[in-house]
Amino acid sequence: MPISRVGLVVHGGRREAVSGAQTVRAWCARHGIGCVDIDVWQGEGSRHTPREEVQAAGSPDLIVTLGGDGTFLRGARIAAQKDIRVLGVDLGKVGFLTETPVADVERALDAVNAGESECEERMTLTMRASRLLEVPSPEEAVLCYGRGPALPAPQPETDPDVDDPWGIALDVTALNDIVVEKLARDHQVSVGVYFAGRLLASYSADGVILATPTGSTAYSFAAGGPVLSPRMRAVIFTPVAPHMAFNRTVIANADEPVALRVLPHSGRAAVSVDGQPRAILEPGDWIGVIASPRPLRLVRLTPTNFYGRLRERMRLTDAPATAADGEAAPMFRPSSPVPDDLRHLQLPPPP
Image (cartoon, rainbow, N blue to C red; front, side):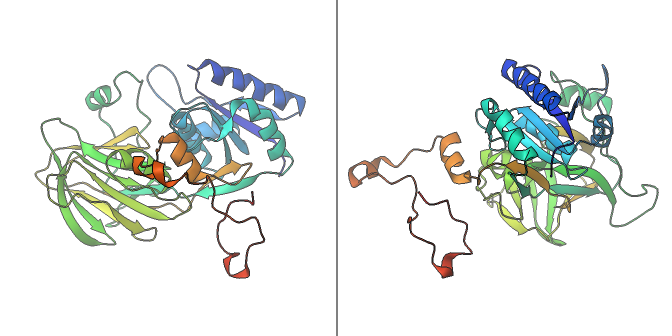
């Protein structure tokens, strides 16, 4: 489908991002395509909600982000609201989400406009809560110190005045993770963790992470969690520095909800969504994290090389002991036609 309107999300503090944005604007002008900058800032002391960002942008059908994964996540938060495609232009150093080099942005836009690109769907998470959530002003000043005001509190998807034992559905979309962590340095957060309605265990920890497969290479990985293929649909639970013997990750299927209930005598907890502080939980509060029905649609010009990127970005090196045993080829795939019993598999293109 040809492009009719482009939304730009730009890391204004990086010269190459600003220059790349000028290239995108010039391309849009040559093709008679509307182009609008999407700015999360609403003024000195507040920020737009994702819905307000979409409305201010005039509902583009393509969002282009120029920056690292943090900038991409800003664009993703907007795109997931209206099933908008996202093209991530790569300026980062460690990220996994952006793949198009800034030097190739015009070629990428040409391909998208000509219908020569594909969309890769990524699972996202959403959330329900026992009550409307917010970040009180004193805590916001601490949680957001040095990076401006927090995003607005999650807006309800359902009537918050209705006393529903299933909680309030919130307008939350997480591409990477939803994290519950201790608010005070000297007081752990204690949470009962429920998978598909059944108690797994009560954790006393610095925090707990619920991540998507896409987010498995982010905070969850840093906390010792596994790496999952982004093609999967699963919810990854990883505790952060738990005070208990069982400190392993547990992976739930995408249709299994995970609930976190803050225990009555726990310390208060902060909730962040894709690294952004969004709420404070009090003892007795709970949240439920579930797979969202709204996936993110990433524009891809070539098949994703996730494992090659994993090797590159994590700077993986081969075991020293293999040096004397010969070098491994960068790809393992015969050049002959694929046998019938293997045609259903995800394979790289022939060499």
